[in-house]
Image (cartoon, rainbow, N blue to C red; front, side, top):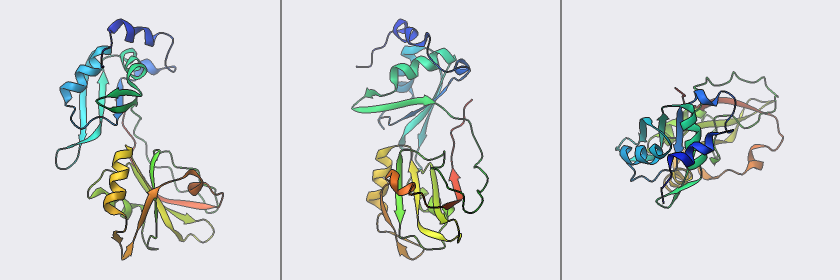
Length: 225
């Protein structure tokens, strides 16, 4: 059921949202059914206000990647749409809705020996990539996965004291479905002469407490209008 009255959505805006959120109108929507058109998305979000723009992100073959940008006319309507449709079921999928993030440059390199937290550009749909050739960098991972997929971020982890590659890295995706598809398509494939191994990342694999240097963290941040 996709019914939402304007009065109901309006009630959700009162007393909700962070300071300044009324100025944010652009939303990032993930895990959309691939069959949804621009008109379908506009009709859905139009239940909570006036939709000024919908942009579905597509693959090279024109097929939807399952996420889109939706711009509402006002910040209040955007907040109402988040309140209503975040974790909302649409055609069997639970969609996610949040404010689009500002475009940001990757952070400067950290000094050797500085403990590294998980980079801001990564998502919860993150793959752990092992058995990497020593010369592989984040840019090589991005190029490798971008042939058939659209990674959100990619990086290779380096040992702090030596500055040498640890032989593993991480690649993040916007949706779990795309991450699973990447495992199915690329696990065991060769990158620079070595068959790579892919699996979903566990938190402990990225935070063992060892000192690491994050080199070439290739991030894509979502731009807010």
